[in-house]
Length: 392
Image (cartoon, rainbow, N blue to C red; front, side, top):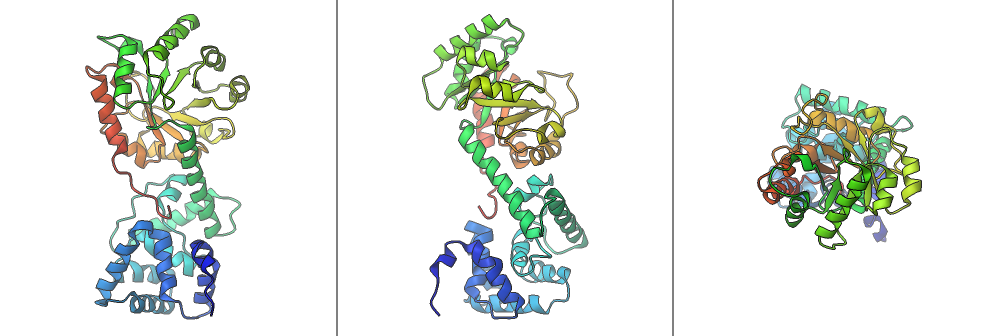
């Protein structure tokens, strides 16, 4: 038989439906095709999976291992038994086990995936559970229910999975293209500064790696805000990677020549885009999941969600959402979410793990004795090795 190498260019197309159909028909499954599932699911962890399977079999060949796994799955009486074979016997964790089963039994299994968890508002906390205990089985069933419910028009688990994974990937692409790097917005508040001028604090943060600064001095007359914006523009280096925006109206942003505008909740974003045109970043403050869900992703580039944590800058605001609440906003929003309020190096990773595309910080840097050190610590925490998404 002549090999069609194009099948290995698009591995997913080969898995669905070719390998699935062969398995369903009782045909032999080439161990290379079984290994292709690990390549598709685990990305750079595929060698780890191969080596572990061979250790369990005490064999130097994955071929015998793949045949044994496939035969065991075919003899299993129900879905729970099939999952148990992979988790208990072969020591796969839930993500890879469900990836394998989603190929062979796509009507009964969907991949337990970090991206999909975020899109359905669930924490990704079942990925390292050992042993198929009843709690893990029940949690996985709840995950499947959430997946189907999140895509009303989906005709299958496989269809819903692709929609949700693609939705998450699209938001990542949007963030990569629209937002500065690093994705940490420094919001100004001159009243929080104790020792220095605003421009000095902002420049120190810039020296520490800040490339997204937004002037937020809404208590001042617009003329004075414009003066401050001009001062910041003059004080900061001319760097094409720097994005200098302003909190306020679209017209103010246009008048001052800002790179972006951050609008208060309830603003007319269509009007803002008409005023500013394309190429100017538009962000919007959001405080409810319903507001997040209604965002027009053709107009708005990102939203801020607050308060995520308690903050000294606004101690009288509503109760903080926390990482679990932030996760619900990430699931609801069609655009990247920026976590705001009480952000610190100690909690930056929890925001990232909840799916936030970036952070917004104000008081902790404005109040700091050493603004550069404070921003550096936040940047280091945010930039620490993030968990990789499966099927990346």
